[in-house]
Image (cartoon, rainbow, N blue to C red):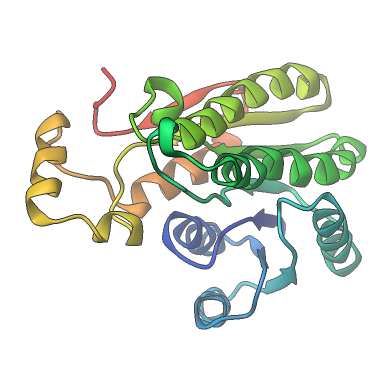
Length: 245
């Protein structure tokens, strides 16, 4: 295919890394951001390049509008385009609201929701000028259902859903499709800390009786990034093994 560029935030590990790897296998050159250089960043870059795609690493915190403006410009100066944007960067600061610190609420909203705005706001002008593009936002099933101990995270992910639907309506006339995926329980470093009995209890809640894998999310993102999804916009796809049915 004609070479295209995908920017994936929060792509040094977990779901974001698998999305970057999957898109690289589809022939996309990949840009990933980082706050501080670390081994995960180096390994992800090597894996992408070993596939045969180019990988550009750009420094910046998505919660800073100035940082995102800078690293988006760096990508444009290097490659001249951003065809796919995957807003995946996110953090958790779980705890009951009655004990939650103000900064724990604000930090999660700043990274997960404001970060999605910051990156998208700085990319959308280039996509609009090109009159084409795909924006795929990583939400969560807890943004739909809520979850005790995650008022901050749930609020940020619910906000991403509203953001996605509104932006899809704004950008449809310019052939820019905006969708979200909402993963359920996925096997990552975040779920690795759970005890076996906790994992078993979670699996019992899921009709498919298992947690998902990062590939399950990445394959849906791959579809939404492709021409096969050209009549899909403003949608939220739950990747949860049927948990929210």
